[in-house]
Image (cartoon, rainbow, N blue to C red; front, side, top):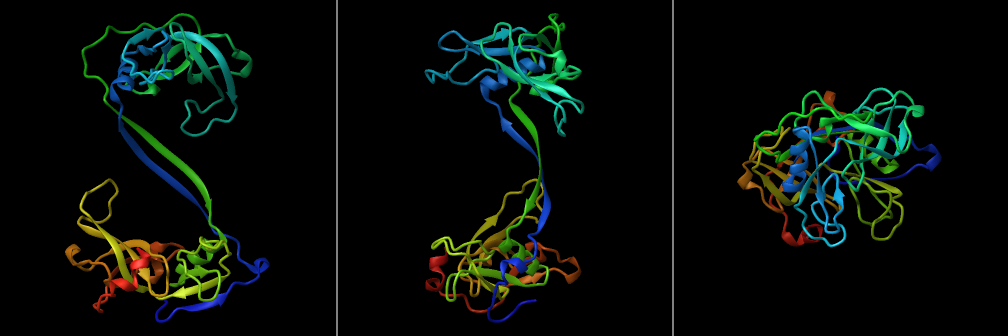
Length: 332
């Protein structure tokens, strides 16, 4: 663990550097949004197994509907129901489907102009091979077994002219909200500077970088000094003590929150650093946190350490006198 005054070390030649760290990054959450009256009308129609477009200022029917006319920017509100049968205008073959796509077998994406519409919509066409689809082919909607008011209510398109029967319209409430699952998988590779910073954390060290002796120290380190463009060729080990520059009291609960509000998220400027980073302040009442307050890192048990800033569980007050505002005003 690193304490006391900062120390420096020249970087090894590039040929001797360790390989950059890499790790999978998975971002998974439900995105919830209000849909408004135009998209809401379209989604309500899908729930009722109908396709609704909107008429533009020039008489064209847009499907899916647009909220504003692309030519005049006028708000559009003349809704038009169109057919569930249409024509393939263009297409592409998907040989290797990705997770989350409509099928786990090869299929086609196509731009389909429904009868009664003047624009095309993108959707999947369920055919066995690229020889079974062509521009100009007639297709129809195959509805999902259960419709909820989302684009997935159209399970896919299939070849054919005969539309599926639709139930009588109901007086159920319109669709006003849409929940879209978001899932991203990224193989993130850290830069050389990020890698030595993360490896330092795994050893209980806080490593910054600077481009020249006496220059500004950035933590986490960057590949170059943002003001001069000079590469950061020098590592600087920093103590795990510093001051609070600015902070926020978190009072609002949210999904996945690990700490019960209220608590403090603050920018901590380590001694010897020239840029602050965001972390938690605990072991004190939220009302006691203030700008200039001296804090120190509370490290997790050594066996829990990895290549992550989460090795520091939070920062806590040291009880030392606050720093004078003039000593950190340029770091806000």
